[in-house]
Length: 191
Image (cartoon, rainbow, N blue to C red; front, side, top):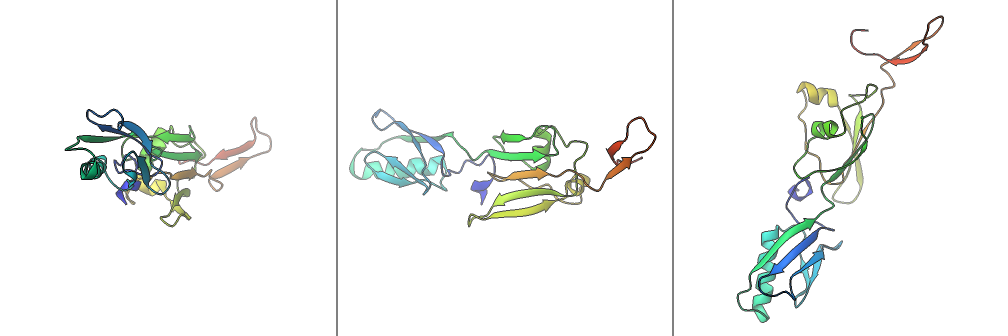
């Protein structure tokens, strides 16, 4: 669903909304969407907000207030804070962490935000962990090298996605014996 993509303006659980009712300071407030998708609003009690745009929610609140309480109210709603615009990237990248974004982000853009892949990254076996609508964590393998070459389409991240870039365990060479610096080194093109 489009509400799951990063940067979406669809209201989701845990979003903090700013609701203004023109010329009525008692009804102007910030509210948080609960786990069920509802907000608590004076005079209306619970209002289901999840999946609506701010404009749709403003219209819904306006209709509820007009019904019994206020003549022709002007209501505006905006998303003041959200937890949706986060993804995690970790492993063989230069800057692992949780990143906030305000627009739609692809896998390659996420890697760029993390400072790129480290030298020992396995570009063929990254893992994407994503929560399904049923709440289960789904694991998918991503071939970053194929995306870079244009063989696979770069796809959009969704809120809460976790990308794990694995270290390459196959593309290594061991140097030992009478050498200055013995060890295990990444096997790169041209060696």
